[in-house]
Image (cartoon, rainbow, N blue to C red):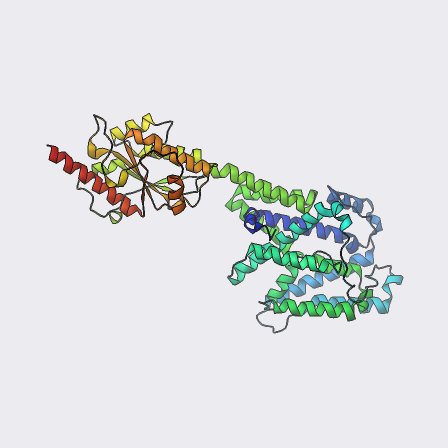
Length: 497
């Protein structure tokens, strides 16, 4: 994905989709730890609707719950939550944050060892942990066809979860995130460890929040964490043999608190946008019912569909008023002639999704605002099937006005193209056809604030006749050209008289 520069495609990973997917993934992780929290022996259950099958099995075998494991799990969760909340509340007053996770691991391991809880109470413990790192060897590529689909889902879900944390950190510390650089970082951090048979890695919300609480701001903190992990692998690992699995599960569940509290986002999405709220709920349901990659895919598809249906309905044009500050010359004392001049601002890119809406909005604004000008209204009614735009060549009063039209009362449209940030072939064809069709109807068009790419594309389209549309650097120069044109027409009229 980094090589293909697919970072730009991450705009489809909207905030509701990421929030719902990570919350659903956290729900799956919590569900996977329930058997350890309850001390139950449970077969491995996965696949579609596996979430519900797990809880159905638990309720069917509720009598097999181990009370000692349940009690230890409850005490561990209460202690973890309480101390973490106190650490967060008084982090500004205390210099050293109490590492309650580490303290709990040491305390329960020592207690389990001396009380021999594995044999006396039947508590499940972590067991033997191999020392050191295995020698590097290439992964078995022959199984790739069997796991490529799941591997893609794991990679994408891990990247999305990490990207969400990265964007949150960027907002917190006021810096920007390069999506392609994140692809490279996650690719290397998983390809290299694969030769040591490490599990896929991604950023963890619990660890990230813990680093925030300790005041960490650079990757030096991560380097220190890595050194400690290596020390654990080579020296402390065997000492964790007696760690109860219910305590480890409690630490994992409490560590996911940051993801689970994202349910609070529902209120925000409901107040801001009901569609985003619906996407959040449905993406979460798909994630829980199937898998995180399925929920993510569903969320992206919903985002695309919403974009496709909403974008063509967005307002493409709005009417601007002619201000004296935008004129190079003062408007005439009688401003009646300015009723034939309309300035419209293009608000969106012009692409195949909104090209038809662009024409419709333009026609509606013209018909609404031109009621004071009878001739302009007649020309508008003639063009109900065509967009009303035509060129005004370089400030000259060319073109033969109709017999009933005053030369200085030609209708003029000025399009402010500053909002037309990009276009496609369909949008360019529509704009070009507009210019060609309206030239015959004595309606002049001026294009202001055009991008160089738009000017070049229109000139090279090959669909325009000898006369090209007029391009101006700013609205003031376009309005000045209209004034100069009208004054020039009046001067010619007086000379003829």
